[in-house]
Image (cartoon, rainbow over all chains, first blue to last red):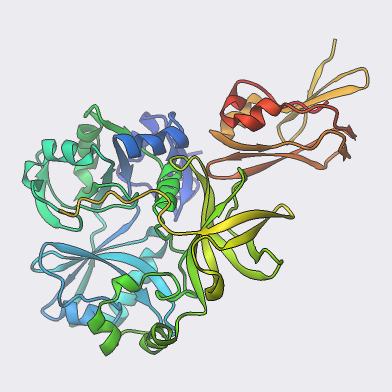
Length: 370
Length: 95
């Protein structure tokens, strides 16, 4: 059954994935590779040892134009956009009036415009939100004819610099317009794995050419969504719709670091009052790492109890961490139980399995900060 | 000679005398991908046909394994509990 018959959209690399032997699955309305013949475990390990190439073209790429674009965007996100220098990227969330999170995204100051990357599952909703609140003073354009590829791992920089010498000197969260393998595009030094790496946007028509150029490099292997998930989980990074959603505030989610002092004090974003109160008094629950002590993974939806059997929270992401060599999870627990090493119980298949609250990340970040 | 029968859920069973050996098919374990965790029933456990007998987990998901027959567990393949990655070469057995 082809992707078109099942009503799924395709990225520009769809046929290449099939050629590479990918197993395709539906994700956010797209037919996406969950793994290649190597398998999730090997793809995960390869990314932490060498360089993995991910097709993330399903994500939304949006351009904001207008003299007041930064000020206007600040009415939707609790981050400092006005102070974001040209050539820099920042992590942000869209909030609602209750301080809940509508989506998480990256914001880039591309000099003469703002460039946003949003989650595939929230793309339509985010565009509607931006258009409703920012037009007509700000022009909102979906860059629908572009692909997005991520190259991640300790060898990513060496490979990227070979094909894009103009990237020399880029630090973590820098953004540049440049050519990669002779293809015009733009790239940020960032990613969703905890490793060093680049996220590269090129016209859709050149995507296969770019992917083949990168895959031709000896260090590079194609990586599917299965490993993308285990990598980001080990890195303690949130997945929208699971670890963060409309019922979680950025304070509860441990994302306060993304809200600058000025924005905390001045507000001016949806839910600013609730966020201000939570900062002042502490949130009633917090996102934490959960490390099961045995071998059994504790997955999303698993209840978390105290040793005494009191329900204190739930796991929002969980599975097996190939780099950690055991089960890893994230979830929310009541603030009183949120300290690292607090013993808890995870209810797995009717059994209260011993676990501990753990500091995140499980696998140390290796961003290239200097 | 025991002959192998298959269930709708990708289990197989081989009966010899009053002993049944239960496993999951090669197709099922291939679909699962890399196995990272296996939980087998304790020896002596009484299982009825259709009961959840074991769990086989990949990085992404947990799969329940149901017993196609009723019986008492007399032996389990401890090797794949200790080394789940070996399960793509061996099959778990509950006699």
